[in-house]
Image 1 (tube, rainbow, N blue to C red):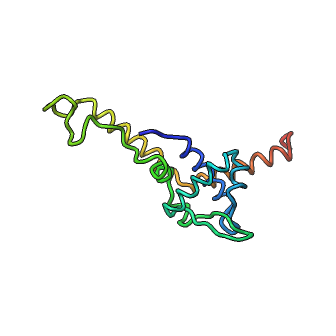
Image 2: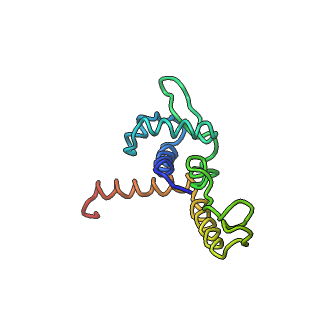
Image 3: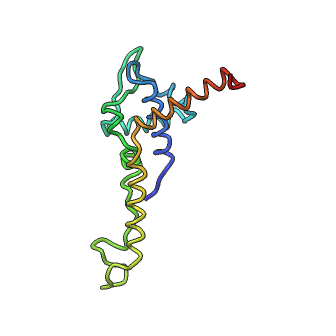
Length: 152
């Protein structure tokens, strides 16, 4: 199991799309600019998410990307598993046998199983919709603080 920058960038980009809403799809360049993600890298990520049927692309002057499924149904875990593979820490070997011939599964395997469950729980707990709502509130609070710096 290896969590890469791909998942982190993708979740940020998807939250940006969700905040904007799908009434007017956003182009990759706009999302990349807003989130400070390399555009070519984001193009690749969006391509993978389109093939996974998380996103759909629209062509034309008002083209760009939007969601193919409701954001309430997309978890961070879904994105991580699409881009980085299943969240499965390595076990000793296939079939539940340690690398030592004929040894039973070692006692440390429970640690890896517990870690997998914890990671899946955290990533599975958050949807893109929830993160977008939180981001919208954060931006509104920031804008209000900038507009009224003394708190008045």
